[in-house]
Image 1 (cartoon, rainbow, N blue to C red):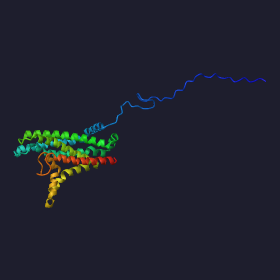
Image 2 (cartoon, one colour):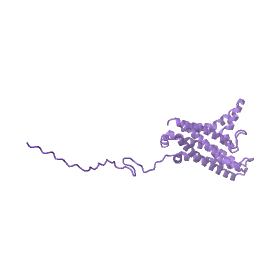
Image 3 (cartoon, rainbow, N blue to C red):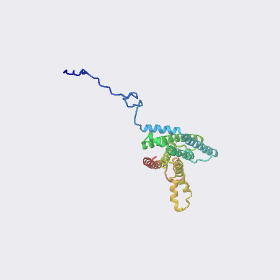
Image 4 (cartoon, rainbow, N blue to C red):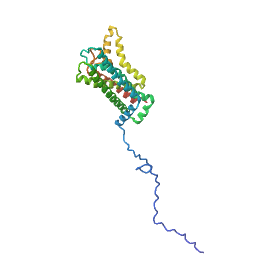
Length: 296
């Protein structure tokens, strides 16, 4: 009996090269395999970016051009018309500063600033743009601060420059009492601050109401209603209320900035500006709380 031959053994391989892992194709420039890396540098947006965004919006909408354009026409047109009427009638100003004649144009022009203040934020609720705004800028406080800064600086600059031009033209047309430096500053810079703050109060009200027509109507009532109510209070028992409404009505406070208030008592000098700043600060705080707690 013959034994079967042993099975042939294959020689052991000295070394097997390891299999290379599968690599996905690279999808971005300079990124790792399988991960997208944008070539655009990523950084956290801040207040400066929000201000740039709000400035782009406020200068690109037609409501800004119309409201501020009408305000400039009212300030210059009514200011020059008033000075022309006084010069033709040869009326004696009796020591009244010529700059006070700019009060009438500023009073009507302030309605345009209030309208723009409301539209700056309330119109975004009407069109749904507020959702895009808060998607790009999730911080609601930052968004409100950016809107307020852009609007305030724009309204203050245009009002101050326009009242200054009107004051120079009125002084050249009339031979009234020469205003000192303090009166010039209060009649131009002070009035610009007062009107811009009044517009900021409108922006806060627009944030609370979220409706353009409703907020504008309320602001016009806030400006005119106290003065109208005071004019029809004939009862002696309401004499104190009537006097307070006259003294603290917005037209009378605006006139006080020109030293041409309706009443002989009440706020004088820069006091109306401190009053409107306090009221606006409270309204802005309420607007911030409302914006933070309510859904859009």
